[in-house]
Length: 251
Length: 222
Image 1 (cartoon, rainbow over the protein chains, first blue to last red):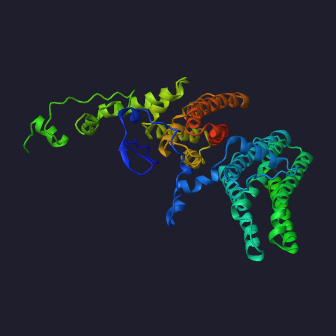
Image 2 (cartoon, helix red, strand yellow; image 1 turned 90 degrees about the vertical axis):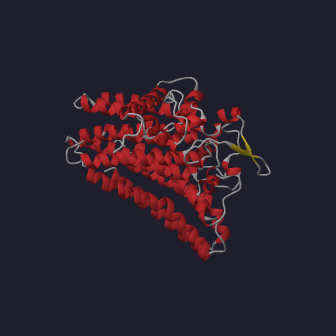
């Protein structure tokens, strides 16, 4: 799949190779062949290096992803976000990238607006300082998206009777940050109370979504004290995230 | 040094006895697929003058650029053209974009800006191409990178215009120019990228492309 070579042979169901006719070679039937994720999965130690191993996590349609993101932004009913119990990783991955990009862009715009409307100094663009900020941002979002779900999964696995799985916690945590993308856009105007209110609401909705999704898993696998410990940890981490957004990037 | 006769020279290079063959006609419009299989094997660039090779490569880049930039209704034609991928066009456009942006930045940060833009273009194109493959797409990795690279052309033009003419003009006009370039780039590339996945996943494949060009547009506006 890397170089896009022209196919000259085809395999039938028994695996026998036959030469493609000239017509078939000239007009390859794209999209009508068996999609890659329905072919037999790769096996062996090198399976993590193959794209086909990860394709099963990306098996969603546009409508489904939009539905999940909207549900994550407004978790006010009891519909579960993953109806078949199969989480996807497309949503969390692109929410992570989109959130990083939005924070960088909106942070820059809010600095520009602060200078123009409050200080009346022309903004001096220092790339070194910006790059340091962007690196710290990257570390922070990576921590929230990849390490915190791993901690939750680890606690369930080692101190409980089972675990909902790293993939599930990763997906839930990823979708919970979807509300912060419109929040960063609203954070741009230099109005202090609006910024605090937006961050408060966003953090609250995010925590509500996480608790809604992980509550029954927590009750199933863990004792009460561990559930409260995880809840307190998540709340504190979200508060730290909101404060970092406010004071470091949108100052 | 004995001078080999011309026919023997060709024999040595081409490795066959049929030296009466003239230079096979390579039509960049149709690509390598138009040559018969025999001609493809004998088609080599060792015996032709260097300026002909360069002219042919430049023509190939120009043909691809016009195919990608001018909106055409027949998507199938475009898809056939781009099966013949090459990375010269994307490299040239990326270098031009990085140079324009590094000239319009402060002199201290010129190299840093160049590095950042260069890395973002190639890493971003790679991520979008891998995303397309993960969604079950059926064009190869290098074909996606080729398409995304060629669709950088409007943004390169906008960066150039920005650097030469618009340095001291209102921010609003720069936003409009870069905005138009961004919409043109996204529209050109979304047509290809969406074609390579199943219709239900078109939006999923197109969204990263949109993000990639948005980030580059913001960089031009900085």
